[in-house]
Amino acid sequence: MELNLKTYKEFKVWQKAMDLTVEIYRLVKLLPKEETYALSDQMRRAVVSIPSNIAEGQGRNSTREFINFLGIARGSNSELETQLQICVMLNYVKNEEAEKALNLCTEVGKMLNTLIKKLRQGLDG
Image (cartoon, rainbow, N blue to C red):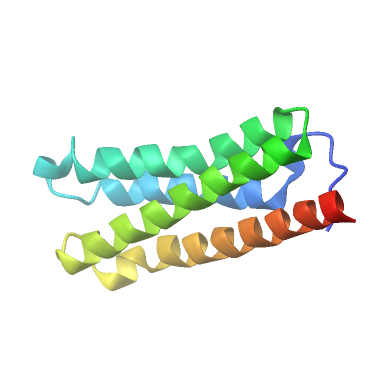
């Protein structure tokens, strides 16, 4: 994995997190109106946090800070995945409608884990 990238926009995990953001904004439009300021708002905040923390962390001057921000992004990704499961359990969206977003959450989570591991190895090695 290449870690000497010039900008956060070059990180595939940031690009994938942006795809997830677009998918969640599409999906929350399917939620009932009574969820406009509850679950859907929470989901939008969680998903925006993912690429935002990747970008902010990469913009910091230290690898340790970057790892910390990636951890925050990972937490937001887990939060979002839980909220998607809630939407399915409450029958707000069908499993098929949430599938793309859930798959993106899984993919982003794995990518974040890999990047964090690589960065930590760089600190230790």
